[in-house]
Image (tube, rainbow over the protein chains, first blue to last red):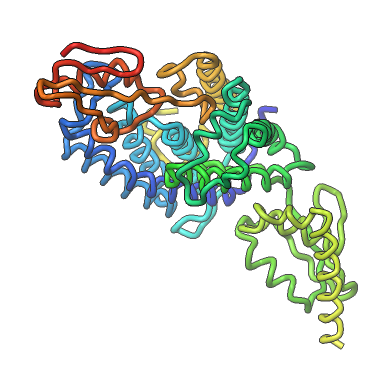
Length: 348
Length: 117
């Protein structure tokens, strides 16, 4: 157990998560500016956690946002993440501590994620120095647990009469980029939707960890985050939250993919182009032309192999599970077969 | 390990390889991340903070009216509140603040109470 925890793992999935969360931090830093400058004024209510906490001044707001943005940019690039991550964390924590009105769940989550990423040496993969170094598993495990904890408690605390009745959704689903259809704003539909939201969040909390249902979890998670971002008010803040959560998904991918592919086909180039996480080992073959995949000892061929490979490539991994849907899978198999045939004909 | 070694890159990597440290950090992390949200279940308002309770209950913001010497003024909440969140005790904090910043305010009333300036 201890050996498993301290084993080294590939740093690239964490590097990708760092980049996405770094971008989210830059966006959130820009959102913090108007909030902090408003708190610096006298017209607006001040709600410090303790009486001794000072009212933010314009200079303090400027200092916090300057440190926040510069640290977030360098953190995104993977430059001295131990230092830049710590500076970013301090800027976020000061913002959170200054006033109760500065609190938001996604900012509190960002503090945890930046802290854990700094601890995990998230600058070890996909960084400006272009050299990767291995990282230990336990630190990555904390980030994966964080994702489950957020989804789990979010789902569990929605099991209350207010939410299940659809009343909370009726109030929340307004003011977004896309207007929620008025025809669907019925108590029955909203209540069914509320139950679906709870089910999806609890599903994500559990099944991101299970290889068999992980593709479904990725797809459901993407659907959940796109819906809340476009249908609810506070689009930017919900976008930040969605980026924070979706960035953690690739950390759950496990095992290397061994792909056997015809040497002269276009697959090797195509796969390498999107294999940002470097999880695919390609074995060029001179014989059989069918794409063959071995993953966790399970063999798959043709369109099925293609789907599983896409489920590990960025950015397809969030949408590739769609290829498993019954109607889509049939079309994908046909397309894959005709592509292979065309390639064979061209070679001949 | 000498103190100064803690700050070198190689030693930072080596402390991460300590199994005992891994167990301690995971234990502490889970203790905080489970105990805090569990303690927030079933509570309302400001106590919900740090509990990952996102959009789980309806947030109803009361409508405030400031009574001044020259009449009643309905309060536009965004003018006086930087983050109108359900987990901030607006009922308790805003009325005294309105008394301070609205000139000539003598009383603040809202759905469930009132406050003499």
